[in-house]
View 1 (cartoon, helix red, strand yellow):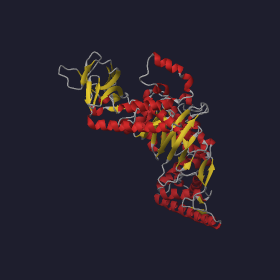
View 2: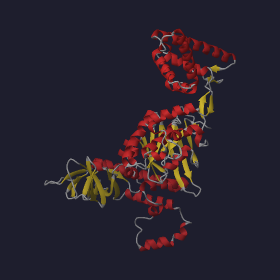
View 3: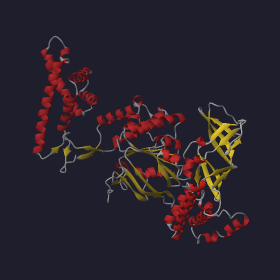
View 4: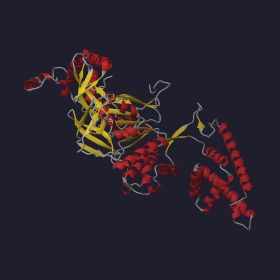
Length: 596
């Protein structure tokens, strides 16, 4: 089947995409995403997480190991890249150094064929001409015609000039030029005294002339339409030829030189590149080269644009400017865009939705607000946000329902304890189910868990209690049996299950996160500090214009808070720091998931 049988199907669907290289390395695991029309999707993650590989699979530049790609219900897996109705902008610009800007932008149109409606060569230009005569005021029409004729251009150049002015084909423009030429010749014969009357008739005469031209055009259209009907050819109101099912027939053809020039000029106008069309890439700045690469993509007029870290080669200020320009361009041309970056700031400022990846796995999909305010796990919490979320360990006391860290105790209440127990029972049940028949699917689930915690299989499979010389000797002696024993991921699963079960009965460590802007920072005053606050000396105070990023040590970690730059602060000052319980994020250090 080549179609998704769904009445409310998304615009682009990625189902269970996976990529395995010949050496057995798996780069992308079970990637699933539905993209709506006109969305701006940003895939973000650290280097090597599989985001560019995913983009290249969608574009057809990488083979898909397994999974399906659908565009408007049509299966794309086996279509070559050039037939996927997509355009891609690379990190390196990939401009041709020997070509000027015009030729670089025009290049896709010169080498490929594109679908175009099949039309009657005589009837279609007459239809365009009729639209011009109906929609253009006589005064404006004659002004454009007289100005074009005054330039004394050759026939081909004159037709192209009129075609550009009226947005019609050169064939239709040639018919209009011939009408005006006959009109001008007739007017010249009527007047021996004034040359201007050949080009400038009274408004009433101009309106009457346009009516005459329209009548002649309609007669020709009627005659040609009747001839086509006799031949059994049907056309629509735009004079495009229809097939037996009443649909417009299409043909694949190359664009004419005039069509290419028109499209290049339109694209250059959108990107503010008209002054640079005759320049070579080496004569352009980085931002201008990036705009040329964008122009080469959008000139193809495809429904999906893909960008692979296009701003990483630019300086900070230009990157900021181009970021907004890309979003404006996306909105202007009503595009659907898939954008890959490792810069979470780009993701937050540009995206409609963000896809966060790590080690080939999707960690979370959501709007920028959802990903920032409600991270699914500790990896997303650490990766999204600038400065990053502050992460540190705390002790949870089951008996009192309190969280203690750095001499501070926070009461979480019975409601949290109930949520805590439900969370750990659910996670323990999931791992218990994986161990019942540990297979490749279970292995991948453990790998995804490790991608969130940032651990390796070797680190996670060693029990926290096994430390010291005896444990290391035992581990070395057991290497021979390791190949015959359970897979490392299965051992990870058992180890983590034991730790999860312990958390249901004992006090244990939880991972706490808080955003820098949620940390309360004040200069120390000679007042009695309240509960839940502590005093420290800053290690670094980074002035960012309107605010400071204030670094300080807490619980053995470097913490960052925000401080208003209206009040000067330095490392010589002492500060009072406070946390509000409702601003804390609590994560399970075993699975990395947020406790909820």
